[in-house]
Length: 604
Image 1 (cartoon, one colour):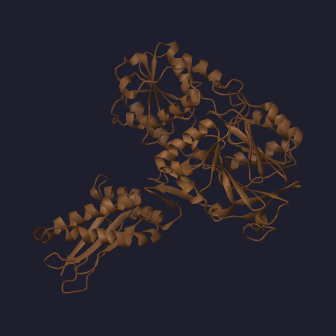
Image 2 (cartoon, one colour):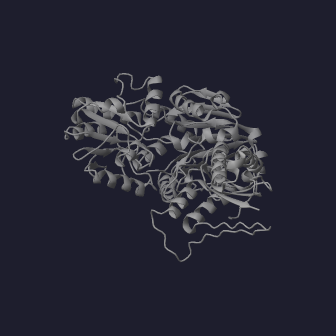
């Protein structure tokens, strides 16, 4: 740990009204999973609360988010969450973490629509207060005077947030770019940025994703012309994979299709969710409705464009299912084309390559940004960052939303733009901001949680460590009953060989996704329980949760035995099957997991 001028803990933040504090629990040193916290005089405000997605190093874990323990401990002084925009890495964790945070939310109309739909799915919509703020709105939350400043990005209604406090003003940019013709929504409010700079800005905390990329990020209008040309080159079926949230891209593809006499269908549930939210808020209003995937199947191959989820190779996405030939309505075949109108998010390279190889094996032509102009980024390249610094002129620059190399490049660029103090931080650094500058004064605990069934698991916790150990080495369970007939079982892989398609490796795959459960029951010759069942959960949940669930699971197993008629109780296989079914239902009901269940039945 580095030398810090303040003792461990945030007593400085609670008792120092002369300073503003900033902590990133996620999003500093990585792309995605943004969770930023501002503190003043003991009050705390969250800006964004997002997720990232699991990769090949975390099989079975699709959604990962920051551990909010630091702010949960201060929930009595947590004022709320402000969402800068509706991307998953900025709002996706709210449905998972709100039960711990229990605070109001502020968002613009489009973001509020998407968030409300997520909260409905999570079953908590009636408990969460969402305050809808108009574009360019100004509002107060506790000691924070907040102003939304309209920017452009790859989703409607992206906002920078100007936080005015007695200490000074901070501009938190969120995700942004300067697009002179964004097609959906307004252009960036550069007049507001200049006014902010003229009034004086203490610090700018901003997007670093493209800090290594020269020039500008490009305009959606230029891309539209390129895609119109590209679609016109093909006579067969065209599938376009893009980020579902990119409403301007949906319109661009629809316009390109219309030029060539094609209809457009949406294939993927998240696309329909975005379409609904967009139309509710006045976007896509002059486009005809999109076709469903079922309707698309009745059109000739040369008369349809499919917009599909799956640009990042997500295994359960529409395009991945099409590539595996298990989609119920859509097929791609020799002569068709798949256009990947998106960038590769770091960490997704293997999944995208697998998807593209699967499509190529079907005879589908692949087009990516390496082959044609098919995508523009939603993040600022270096020229845009320079323009922002020229307008805002902060005293301090704190790069976020980027890996280490992006943050360092951003800091060097800020220094070239005459920023007095560029400061590179990492998740957990507590930054103290005063009129004289910024200092890292503490380090707070940070971690990651993974959505698993109906709960959350710490990525470094025992449950996931057990699963990883099992997938590499398998597991062994020994049961010994000291009575008239000692019985025990051992399973070992050791120096033997296992077929890849065999039961052992299938079991390991299931275990790494869901964990395993072992139930040991001791019964007499009439099938009556001679002792309470012993049930162990391995890699399913953390130990405390498993201990709390033990009485519930024991009761379920006992009931399964007691409900069997006298005759079937004497049949070991019948008893095992009954208990296995019961425990499978009980564990799924409690944790949303379907682990491998092993029943050890011992008769005495």
